[in-house]
Image 1 (spheres, helix red, strand yellow):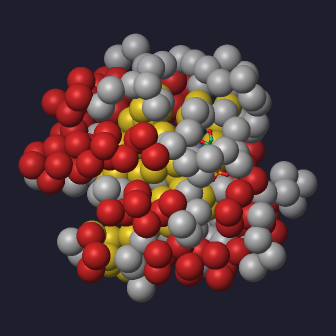
Image 2 (cartoon, helix red, strand yellow):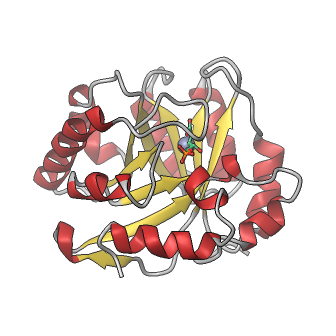
Length: 234
Ligand code: DX5
Ligand code: ZN
C-alpha cells in the first residue's frame, strides 16, 4: 500500500527547500513493526537500517522483512544498507519496491553501475558517506545519484550523539549540489533531535533521519511535527 510521499513542507529559513522527516525503525519495537509504522504515518518515509555484522558491528534485518514492510507500510521505504557487497545485494531492495536504496561509498565496488541499476529498477539511488569519508571524490558523480547521505554518527547503532564536525562537510555538499543543478536530496542520519536538526538544516540538509528521538517518545507524531518545524518546515 506504499504510495508516493506526501508533498513535503518547505523551509523558508533554508531557501525554500523541502523538509522531509524519515523516522528510523531501528529504534522501534521489532516485535510490533506494523503498529510501529502506524505511529509515524505523518512522516514522509520510513528509514530502514540494514546491517550485516560485517560492514558495521551490528545485525538488524534483511530482505524478507523489508518485503513484508513494503506491503504494510503507509509511507514509502527509505532503505539504508550498511552492508558489505551492496553491488550484489542492493538491487533486491529496489525490486522489493523501496522508494530509495542507499548504499555506502566505502563498500561499493562499482557505484555508478550500481546506482544506474537501482534507478533502472525504479528506486532512487543513494550514496552514504561515513564520517571519515570525504565528500569531494563523489561530487563528480552527483548526476548519477538521487540522494547523498552524510552520516552524522559512525554507522551501526541508534542513540549516538550528533557529530557537529560534519557540518562543514554538509555545507560543501550543499554548495556542490546547488552548483550542479542535479536534483539530489541531502540526508543526515545520526543523533538528529529537535536541537541538532537546526544546525543540520542551516548547513543545507533537507532529509532528516531520526530514530531514538522519534521512537523514544510517547507521542511520535508530535516529535515529527517538532522536527519539521525546527528544520524550518511547516
Ligand atoms: C545508525 C543508523 C541510523 C540510526 C539513527 O547507524 O544508520 O539510521 O537509526 O538513530 P538515532 O537517530 O537514534 O541516532
Ligand atoms: Zn540509517
